[in-house]
Image 1 (spheres, rainbow, N blue to C red):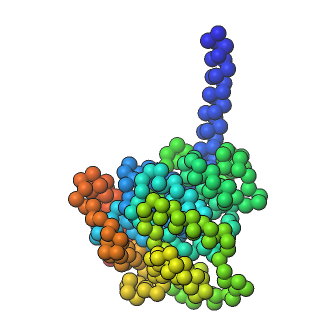
Image 2 (image 1 turned 180 degrees about the vertical axis):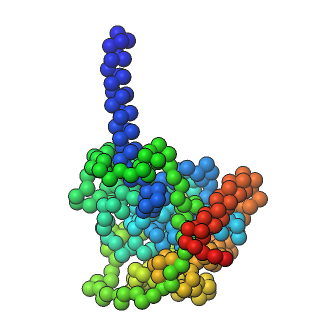
Length: 346
């Protein structure tokens, strides 16, 4: 009887292992190219997820704030759960999922994605959703995100989506077949090079500046969840010069914040107080900040988090101090590595 059972079970196990191995090989690694696809899953590697501040949103959070600076200057324990073109419903479900691990004191949401009422790209969906661990939050995020040409089963079994990558495999796919490559510093994507802001395109006039019902509904869900859990929700607009942030959009967010007694900071309006120099503090002509700009943003915002939201200084916490000492060391090591890479001299 046991032999018969083994004859059934062993082939099943072998098939599962082969399929799992093929899936790991064929899925994009996001190690050295389009590294943003790795950001979401790195959160789960954290040994201590007791973060007081968690950021949610697109590239305007994961490239514009430095958790290391927040820690060094204010002792604020923070993490950025950002991803490329993260839509507001994805931010909401990431917030919901975060609460299964810990409850932050402050949730910071960058409102750039309010302009989207539907997902714009399947590849961007994958860069956020594939990195999430399976949970009801991931399921609901997939259902809210899928475009008409996407299938839920492809998220359950990514091999169905990426099976054609056989012809595109590189040495990177084999190098990171069974191991992860860390690309961020608590969710922050670092660049040390500089490219001054130049002539940006003129903003196009829109037929309708109103945010869509779906976008509004998820902002409301986010606000209600934070209120229910006793979390302070802070809305921000990063100081990116492009894509253009319309005054009509800004007015809608300001009105919403006033109505619900939320803090909203448009960093474009206070960029001089922050001390940003768009000749030196951006690496791609004004779209995103480099590390020097991100550190200035963190110095400015950290004071607000400390003074207005009473985020504690946790540098006396022995366990956290040990964790952060390694993070700080890795942070400055990468700064020096990138200086060499980009030929930057002190």
